[in-house]
Image 1 (tube, rainbow, N blue to C red):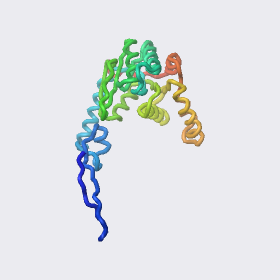
Image 2: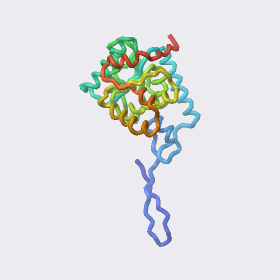
Image 3: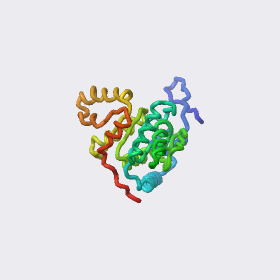
Length: 255
């Protein structure tokens, strides 16, 4: 990284010290180019008109590619879960069981829990969909994805996860999983979506989160009891299927 030194302005008779100024760098992703545009650290490479064209094209491509999807569930969880982890096997079994009842499986297309869910979909013979995201560090699409799309923008990808699913399932994961979980919870709370089950698998992992929601946000009146009750915590594949039994499925928009 190139730097240039600049003499700091000082009072008369006082010593001036060099200040290191960082040269703007190229953005590492399209999201960074958009969100950090016009800052001193990131070079702006596109005009707003070009950004809008790219966003439009990305949404249009997602709508076109997923128009045939009907009964589907979006499954989230950590990309860092190794294949020998029991959580990986559980995600594979859940996706396989859902596939056996006609659910298509949508994931973020990466490794870990996402790979396990796509693998279960492939084994069940149902559409296995991966919605990848451009990241500064390369993330390869897992080999069990049948229909894969790569997005430049997180928000465009989020639209696809919700618009083409009838429910969300969250396995243990980090910030990305929490982001998608609370996105869905907010959409339910604000009635942007309806009859949309949100299922958290592994009570040992998620129990503390629900305890906190009841202890702080609910007790202090920041949320209502129904907001917590919409988050269904389960441990077994059969419980997942039962939790999704009342979901209202999307009609495919194309054959």
